[in-house]
Image (cartoon, rainbow, N blue to C red; front, side, top):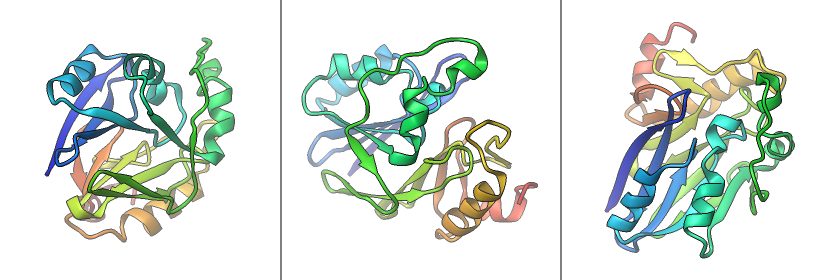
Length: 209
């Protein structure tokens, strides 16, 4: 069984996701946007062990809660990020482009490439390299649960920004076409902002595609 909860955090209203494999009580947090006592309480309430922090990309509004989590849960947590976004991490997640400094903390220690296999207890997680919004953007696909955590690649009837220094519009459309729209139609897409959607919905009704 899988436990899943969404938390909307930070001034840009980012979606942060908590996933727990209930058979082993191992937990992952996806894109911790900001420090959150609510996530801390939920992990403790579920008697879970935080094992993974999974980052879809290294923009500051998706990594702002990493340091808080690693301080609260200090035992054996791995921080996962694609190697093509390490430079963005080291530059403060792009915060200087918005006029402020941000220090994300120690570098990720689980460096991803396309199709890196990840296991959270009994949950298999496939890493899909989906560049475009950033060079190292990834989507985390859980085939057993027909779910994909797609960060700022695609939204409900929308797509991620491509006007940033690390963005590439043709790459973003290629990622959506080749990695997202090829998933089963009933796959639920959990984006970094806004409501969840499905592959079939975006195929039929996304005005950008």
